Image 1 (cartoon, rainbow, N blue to C red):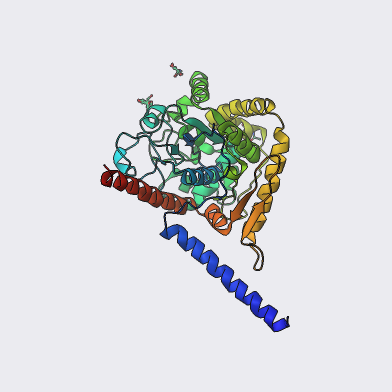
Image 2 (cartoon, rainbow, N blue to C red):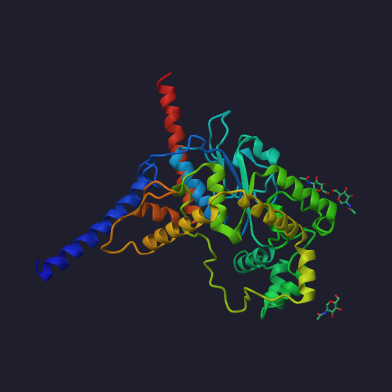
Length: 397
Ligand SMILES: *[C@@H]1O[C@H](CO)[C@@H](O)[C@H](O)[C@H]1NC(C)=O
Ligand SMILES: *[C@@H]1O[C@H](CO)[C@@H](O)[C@H](O)[C@H]1NC(C)=O
Ligand SMILES: *[C@@H]1O[C@H](CO)[C@@H](O)[C@H](O)[C@H]1NC(C)=O
C-alpha cells in the first residue's frame, strides 16, 4: 500500500472512531438501552440486588455510587432518587416523599446510593429491611482536612465561622484548624451547617443537635458505634479501597465486571500550596483533634479492626485483590487513551477470578460521568422504563 493510502485509511479510521463514540454516547441518551458492561453471561444465583449504601462525604463514595448505579441499570433495578439534583436530604434525616422520583404505589425500591442522613426507620419505608446495608469510612484526620479544603473553596457562606477563620488563617488554614478547630465551625450547629465536625457520624445519623456535649459523652458515642455496627452488614474503608471492593463483591455475590471503576470526584481542585496535605501533628494538636473528632475516631477505629477480621476469614483474598488491581489498571489505561488507532473495545480475558468480559468506550464514558450527570441519566432511564411497564400493564389488562 502506498504511504498516502495508509495515511488516508488512518484518517478515515480516526474519523470513524470519533463518529462511532459520538453515536454510542448519543445512543445512551436517546434510547432506553442499558449502557453498562456487556457480556452478562454468568450471574451468581445468590446475587444480592437490594442494597442500601450510606454515602459518606469525602470518602470516595461517588466512585461507589457510580458502581451501584451502573449495576442498577444493568439489572433494571429501581433506585431511590430525588426528583431533582442528587441529595435526598442533607441536614436532617426526614425523607420528604414529595421530593422523591415517581414510583409505582406500594412498591419498594431496590437501591439507595444518594446522599442522605441515615435513619433506619425513614429508609425502611422505601427499601426492604433485608437489603444489604453498607457504607464507607475514611481515616478521620484526612477526611476532615479533605472536607475543609473542599468546603472552604466551594460553598463558603461569607457570614460563616468557616469564612472568618479562613481569612484569619489564610497563610496556613490547616495549622489554624488543628490549633483552633472551634474557630472554624460552630459546635452548637446554630448558625453553620458545618462539614468538618464529625460529619461521617452525622451522615450515619449521629444526633448533632448538641454536638459539643455529645461528642464528649463516651456513653453516647459508644452507643452510637454499637448501633451502626448492628445496622450495617459491612463498612468499607477509603484507605483500602480495592480490598473493600473485593470484600463487597464477595458479600454481594457479584462479578469482577460489576465492580470495575475509574476514580470520580477525586478532588478536581488542585489545591493551592497553603493546603498542607500531610501535616505532622504536634502533641497538642493530636490531643485537640482527638477531642474534636471523637465520634468519627471511635467509629473508624471500631470498623478498622472489624474490616481486618473480616478479611482474615476470606480465602485467597490477596490474590484476588492483586488480579483486580491489574484489571483496573488495564481498564484505566484503555479509558485514558482509547488509542486513535487502537481497539474501541477492551477485552478482559477469562481467568481464575473472572469470565471474559469487555469494556467499551461507552463504559469508559459512563464511568467518567460526574455524579450529577449519572444521576440524571439513571433518573431518566428509570422513569422511561417504569412508565413503559405501566403502559404495558394498562394496555394488556
Ligand atoms: C436529638 O437530640 C435532641 C436533644 O437532645 C432531641 O430534642 C431530638 O429529638 C433528637 N433528635 C432525634 C432525631 O433523635
Ligand atoms: C451521656 O449520654 C447518655 C446516653 O445517651 C445519657 O444517658 C447521659 O445522660 C449523658 N451524660 C451526660 C453527662 O450528658
Ligand atoms: C499545649 O497546650 C497547653 C494547654 O492547652 C498550653 O499551655 C501549651 O502552651 C501548648 N503547647 C504548645 C507547644 O503549643
